[in-house]
Length: 331
Image (cartoon, rainbow, N blue to C red; front, side, top):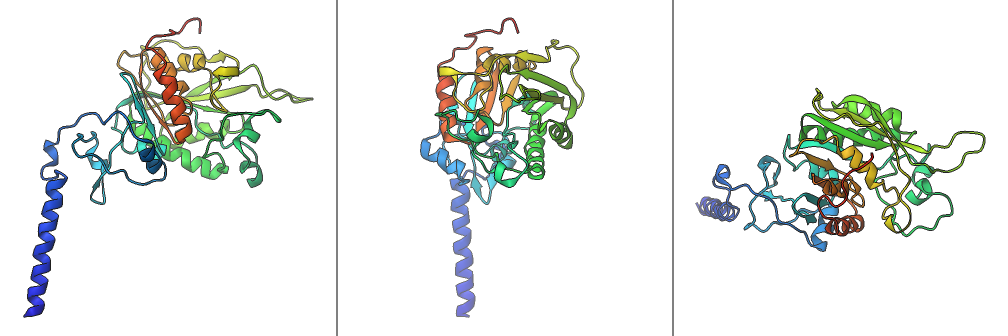
């Protein structure tokens, strides 16, 4: 009898505790939750927690994000807190795949991104070298920190790319466009990868960077490539864009990242999101070149950057740009 009373007492205590938790998290009726934008900034410590994969406890006074079914995990409410946000640009700091899963389906018009190429060599020892050694001219002293995620072999690179590209496919609207940078080594597999993630491959654009490591007895590898495709059918009423960009590598004080792309090139590519209300996504924002180009053109964009260092650089850079500050001309 005492045992039965003990069991009943524990059961009632558990019910009361669950009721308190339910009331605390406002989960009685999820259909009545007011959906608005997330808060504007995240502190440095929260950014580190996000980077390390730790869930950030939200302030429950802040309304929830849109895709509720992706924001409930083990009874905890997960929220996206922008690292930087203004009237056009939202930048998140953290792992791209984790953040992509929490964004709203069919909310993006174009994915324009420059992910790690994982292209530094055929052997494990070569791939494990610093990104400075792999991608910058030998002997150049650089103040730019290495970036992560660049040591995968070809099979793991393919598997990883298909994961995040599949999320981008879900996020894109019908007819949305993908433009992904790569180099000569990874060009063949990148054309396979985007198709493996259900994108329709449409072609390859070329960036002539006008400078590269010399190769005696052979040709310079002075070009990088933009593999592009669409989510199923492609709209036929947009602008006709050029397929080759002649812009030198960013040098001097304007350089902020080891593999930085010229903002003029990114502006030209951003024109693929030609509708007035278009939203651009860059899951590997780096120092923010895609986002800077979008803002200069008056376009909305969302970026994700894993490195707290480069997220801070991108945020500072974006804060100094005014919408329409340098409109596209002559490209």
